[in-house]
Amino acid sequence: MMRKTLSTLQAMRSKGEKIAVLTCYDASFATLLETNGVDVLLVGDSLGMVIQGRETTLPVTIEQMAYHTSCVASGAQQAFIMVDMPFGTSQVSPRETFAYAVQLMAAGAQMVKLEGGAEMAETVHFLASRGIPVCGHVGLTPQSVHQLGGYKVQGKGDAAAQKLLQDALALQGAGAGIVLMEAIPAALATEVTARLSAPTIGIGAGAGCSGQVLVIYDMLGIYPGKKARFVKDFMAGTGSVGQAVANYVAEVKAGTFPAPEHSF
Ligand code: KIV
Ligand code: NA
Image (cartoon, rainbow, N blue to C red; front, side, top):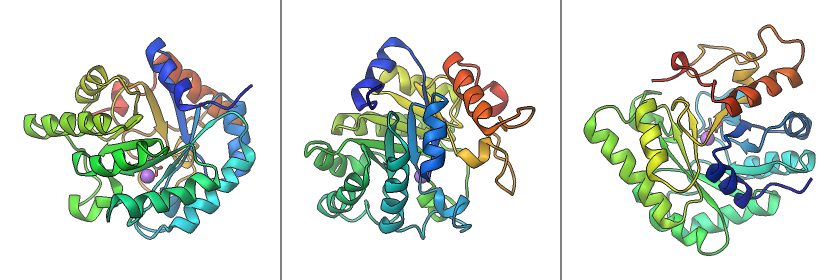
C-alpha cells in the first residue's frame, strides 16, 4: 500500500469516510498504529507532557519535534504524518516559520500543524503556497494556556462561535489543507465542518467532524492525572494495545466515538 497523502484525506472527506488520527512519538507505535488502521499519525507537541512530563507544551523545541518525527517516519510506511510546530516557531513571522517547518519536513513530516486562527492566515499562505501543507488548530490552543487562563472549552456563546467559524474560514482561505478543532461545542464543530471543504479533525469537538484525534497515552489509559471529558479509555476490557487501537479506529469510522458523554 502506498503512503497516504493529503489528497487521500481530502477524498475520504468527500466520500464521508471518517479519518482516524492518533498522536505518535516513536517508531514502534507508528508501526502498530498504522497496522491497526490509523490514517494519520500526529507527532504532537503533547510529547512535552506525556513523554517529558512537563506541565505544558511550551518548553518543547524544534529539535525535539524533528527527532520524534524521524522516529515516527522510520516506523510508518502508509500513514500520513502530521507534525506540530512547537511554541515560538510559528508566531514570529512567515519566513521564520517556513525555516522551522523545513526542519520538520526534512525529518519526515507531510504536513505541519500550527495553533491559531485568522492571525495566522498570512503565515499559512506563505507556507502552503511554497509547498508545505498546513493544518490550522483552533479552539483550545494549548500553547496559549496562560493567555486562556487554563484548559477550558472554547467557542461558547454566539460571539465566540462566530469568531471560531471566521477563523476556520480564514485558515482555509489562506490555504490550510486541514482544520483541527479542540474542545468546542459539538454543534459548532458540526457547523464549521459543513461550511468548510477542507477536512476537519476534532478532539473534544463532537462526532460531526471529518475525523477524530486523541493522545495515544490518554486512549490507552496510561496517562496519570485527571481524565479529560473527551477521552475514552479504549484499553479497558481489551486484551492488547493493538486491539484497543483497532477498536478506536472502528468507533471513529462508525461515528460512534465520540459519544455525547465525550462532547461539549
Ligand atoms: O499535541 C497534540 O497532541 C495535539 C492534539 C491533541 C490535537 O495537538
Ligand atoms: Na499540539
